[in-house]
Length: 292
Image 1 (cartoon, rainbow, N blue to C red):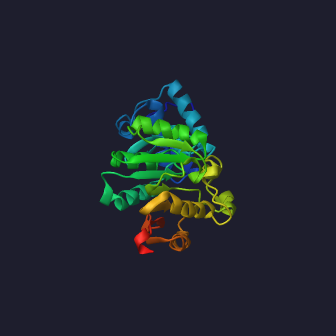
Image 2: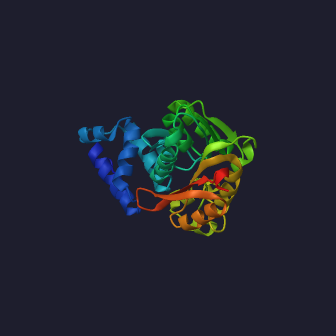
Image 3: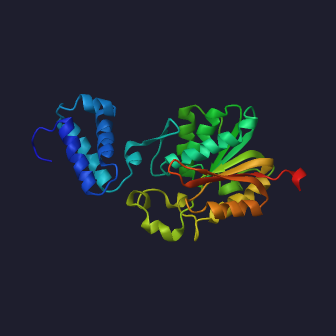
């Protein structure tokens, strides 16, 4: 930047052009979000105050955030938050950034539990930031909700989000998949957004994902289905008869996941598409004993 007067409008145009030249898909939005953070305002205020000059301290703070974004750090980590299902979740490098696609998992869980909305038990595995567990708990306040993750650091983020957003009733446990759950407990529903990226595909991911988001939450083994298999197998022992398993999977994994669930004894296996039209969530009911 030169020493000329830098107004809000001018600095936004400069930053957006800089980001665009670096191949960022949402260059203007990124520039606006970062400046709004510096100025402690919303994006509408940036438009209204388009001609306001920035102070030297404001410019210095904005430069620091621009440098972080230039290094491919995700916008959500720089801002320290991400909107999901209409709520603002705190996020950082300990957890994956919640994606709009994962909202499909929440809506599927709500739809497939609508017949018993007054009471039930849900277990959310690979909970990460807690976004699925928290959103479900707020929509089903009379349900008992459990959430687990193998990462103690991720659980710190999830607990903070649950308390801040008004879902203190969630019971958080650390462990790999079902290891943290008492074997005698049975759930009406199990949800999971497991790691499902094939190991060989991780080097080809976008830089902001590959270089910053936790690989523990990305790596799904050789074919991406390593944890999915564990989920399907474990769910047969942790669901009540007729209980529902719902999992987010990769865009090309639905057919194989449906086959795994059918082989394990699930019925009414369904696939739900995300906002982009991709097969994103596979869900099914554990066959009741009377169906044997």
